[in-house]
Image (cartoon, rainbow, N blue to C red; front, side):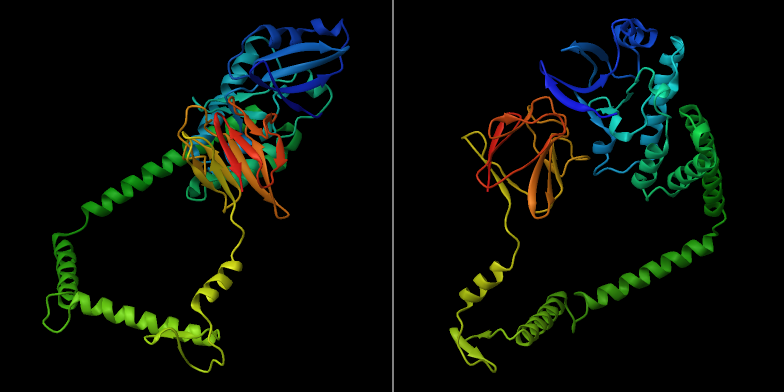
Length: 390
């Protein structure tokens, strides 16, 4: 089952071709999802072209989980949002007696509204009649993207994954919701217990212990005062000068070891050490610059766009929200996650991230999630901002 991302009538869509005849178009599931606006589900329409039918899911203003968490990690807050999205979608399906197993589980088919940060799912009619639902990609994604700073959340995800391994086909969205709610209860109990323990420890500290801590703190302050400025033999300036001198001697020794001549006070062409030829330091600097990686920059075009974007660290996402973008551009035509630059085999690639205002290479608009190679002097347009790549 392969999808195609397209841009049509100022909207972005995922397009899936389906094998149906005229009689099947009126099947119940197709009728419900194309004529009702169901909470938690992407809006979908069915169109026929040259005798072929296809479903068009509107993904404008959306970002897939797969792309959204390129930089950001999945923490307890985000799993809570995903769980709420699952619950909302299942409630909508239950109202019309639709099967929750037809919700796609691949993170690239689960979307985040970039403004509200609500979660939306693809409901694919009669999906389980052809393909068995598999939760592995979704759960593996959670494991790989879990925020390691939240140990309780990581432990909860691994526990859910272990439950999936023992159940496989019997593991559904409802199963995930049930297990996550139990994990949340467990984490809440741990947090309460930890709070009570800390409070008890704080109240049992005697006044004598507090005084000892204060004395220790004062002692450290006296020592600091002695060494930095309040003793007649030692002052902060002299200490810093000593460190700087040691650092200079160390760097001078490193220069000798590399066989590079040392500069002396005798002028630019005066040297010391066992060097047979005089080398101008400017030439050495040029030699060192030649070893640095090639610069990659986007130069803004026009009087209103004097920006210079450095693409030295790849991959890099360009957008206007710092939490998910590596390069932030505050412009009305730039999306929250607008485009992504990557490197493959030494070549730089530009990828559109399902933006409404568009990503262009040499005046040609990229399809949603389309990735193209860029070369020097290519004209790149992000929204209304034009750049030249060099």
